Length: 254
Image (tube, rainbow, N blue to C red):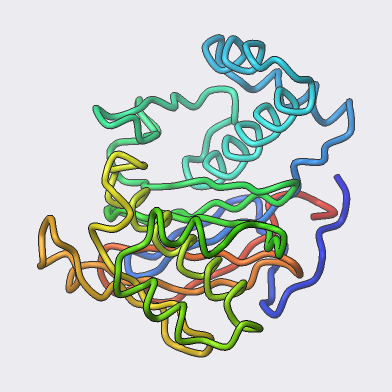
């Protein structure tokens, strides 16, 4: 796998077996730019359903990224479950959120995955929901138009109040924080993005400010801003205080 770009955060090689503390969250980083032999090894660990899903992608690059993403996830979860990657049963709940089922899961582990370009991130926690989102920072996006279509009025006003030079990073901070919380909450994109508010100003603590569906959610959930690699921004959402956050590399050379 190709080496990922540097970031402002320290990512450690992971031990073969990982014990996760109930008051902490583990983050994992890897690359989806896998060599053919690595892709073949990943595919061997996938379930029949996962292989079928990979084969439904029209373009080879998308098939390869899906295979690498699921392969990396299985390798990571196997370290906690004390099992082989191929033996894991990855299912989905009623809202489509992936779960670790079977004897290895036992309802303990919660996890989430995101990727953008070749950068892959996963968050793992015990007995509480997590969500993670990563995005490549693109200055060529029509940020103002997208923000006015999807963000809340308060977020649009906060974005407009910033100098032009800060708006690209602020837009991506807002987007990843929103996506991370939606994924942690189990909504995906079924809940409108303008139905809740997050912070977005540079240097401002990542926070869930308000939610119209259930106002108590703003108290129950915590957001963490992440700096996973140069040219990317990311966010983590956790049910409750995130506690200690450990950062691991998901594969040799990542």
